[in-house]
Length: 229
Image 1 (tube, rainbow, N blue to C red):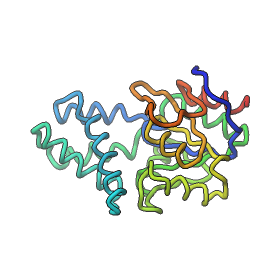
Image 2 (image 1 turned 120 degrees about the horizontal axis):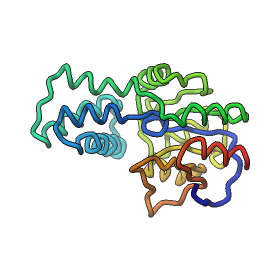
Image 3 (image 1 turned 90 degrees about the vertical axis):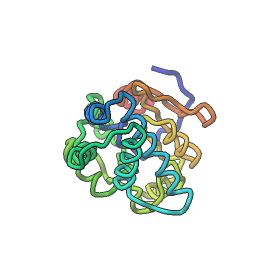
């Protein structure tokens, strides 16, 4: 467990979904195999985030799924691979049926039983989010499932965080984002929220951003800190 700064016990916990709660490793190995590179999935996920931000910065909006399809075509072009349409569709659909990381359900259960309000906030589309949570068996833990579809701007822009706070009637300082992404930490902290970083393998914080109030190797570790605060 890492040492962190002091924090105020949050009234509301906002959870990022992909990679934070749900395990993309199966999708990763499938995509890497189809493209023929160990870097294909990471490249695709990075491009998907990059172009979601380009949409937001240039005042446009396509759903995360549409951007995922478009950036997969970019990855095919970069690696000189043409994946058959049906296979490509199957690979991209895997994001809707991901298993949770093993620490997620125990951590959510601890937090729910301790009386925390739990809400999911994802860059994914509304319909995809509902499918993901049902497939992973996590729907029952969340008071609300929120997508950036409603504001048509992607995290880490301030609008999605503000939208979630307004929907739940909570001030920024009373909320904490829990995520496994440095960019999401940056967005939440700069929007005035508190933040907790799950240091999943290969994930790191952005050195030029404020540091999160909590860092832990798992959701259970974060939950213990929150419950005992």
